[in-house]
Image (tube, rainbow, N blue to C red):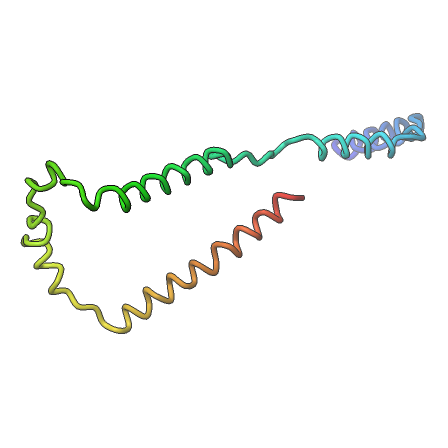
Length: 137
């Protein structure tokens, strides 16, 4: 019974395919598609906008330079005020700094940390360049 229904379905499919006409795209189909592709690539999908603008970086740098120059040139001869009364020896003379000062590191660990730092300094610009190129396409 299944073979008989499959034969009928096969004949029906052949008739439908023969009766349907082959559709062809319009003459300017490719041009329309290319126009749409150009429009989508020209749009600003991913626009880089820095978190801190160049004006703000300039303002921050001017403020840092001004505060450093003020601290260097003007406060050398003045009285420190309430800083004279603060005891800073608690920072250098406590149990934590004494415990940390007794720690020693092997040369292998130091070499590993230094090489890890160097590799990070090399890989970060390389990966940034790689991902920037991937985002261009």
